[in-house]
Image (cartoon, rainbow, N blue to C red; front, side, top):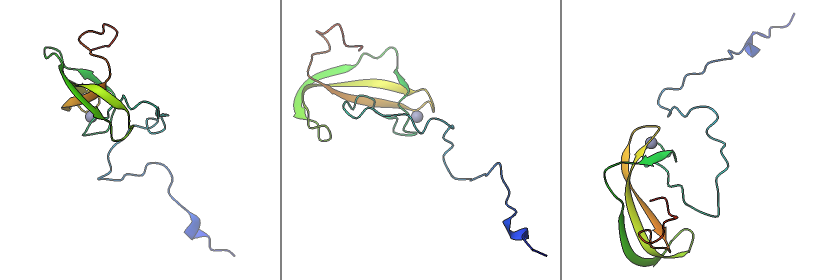
Length: 108
Ligand SMILES: [Zn+2]
């Protein structure tokens, strides 16, 4: 006679209150390492956000070097963004070497 009642484990839904509810399948997206273009949402770290209409991005010539990528940039662009996942609005800061006001290829 074997008493293996200890091995009976409940499978299925495991509720963990307090954990952020990250939707399944979104955690293993390969992230581009070369370019740090996609700035995550400060609230839920989602990179799915869009520009808020009505407020044009602010462009300033502010030469510097990115601390992470060590890439030199000339312009800093701030634009108002809204997260598509949590609705959080935040100001996105981006660095570029091209003047977005003169370069029609930039999506700003
Ligand atoms: Zn968010």
